[in-house]
Image (cartoon, rainbow, N blue to C red; front, side, top):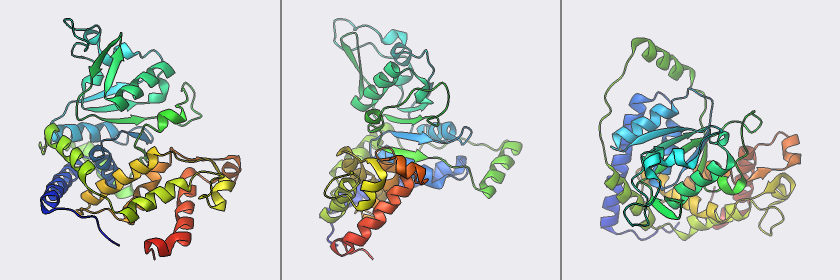
Amino acid sequence: MAQPNVTDPLRGEVERCSRCLGRLRAELARVVVGQERFVEQVLIGLLASGHVLVEGVPGLAKTLLLRTLASAAQLEFRRIEFTPDLTLEDLIGCSGLGPSAGQDELAAPTGPLSAHVILADQIDRGPPKTQAAFLDAIHQGEVVAGGARMPLAKPLFVVATRNPADQEGTYRVGQSALDRFLMHLRMEYPRGEDEWEIARRGIAAVGGRVEPLTDGEEILRFQQLLGRLPISDPVLRYAWTLVRATRPQSAEAPEMVDRWFAWGAGPRAVVALAACAKARAILCGRWAAKIADVEAMAPAVLRHRVAPNEIAQADALSADKLIHMLMEAIRREHHEDYGLP
């Protein structure tokens, strides 16, 4: 497969970025036991300048992981507990309301939206109006209130958690809101040996200082680097083909999509898949994304952008299962086009 043309200086920048991400991953692994795949995907989200949605039971070290990441990158971390009475003013902070000294911009915020790394916990417990304002703010990189605007910190990385859809006391997060998240991640229970190590550390009160490994300016440069890094046409076309195949009743959709999908992913998914594939390649020490990178990231990028219909639900087919079935169908149909085994 033809590879994109990458200059030597650009390759050097990619190598520096890869080494830095490797050190971050090692530091996170030192503090957070297990969860290697989740850590990898969080770093991919950070590099790809996207925000991620997470599902997982409490107590799996999400807060510890993000606080450690922020400390290693010398960034401010804040946690937001979404509740039914949470307002936009709570997120901004009281001193952030009202234009400053004849300017259109708001005064410096004191609320949690002033941070670089934010854990938005149980976002579906916040009222729809606050949810919408928060998601719009992190997507646009600024808050608009009272006719004035307040730019948010850069870099900005948000990890939002939500509860199971049938849990009481929650508000539905709409499909258009979900599409604003780069990825939807699943955080699983730790393996047995990892949980033993967690218990051992808890008893022994093992801890340690987090080493500063990078800073906000360098992370911004790495994010800009990702945008400059080319992706080959075959890899991009594979991502494009996969996304278009998720749409029921379209010419590109396999029969299984018409049978089991309620709806498919929009154009934003192609951009997200390409960005995540490039970020994964860099994290793996490569400067060129492969089709394998697209396939590895497809579940995280697509699981909140597609939906099983009632027939699929009756057949116990989850979004993840359908995505894997779709990739198998695409491989069978296009393996010669992409040189797939």
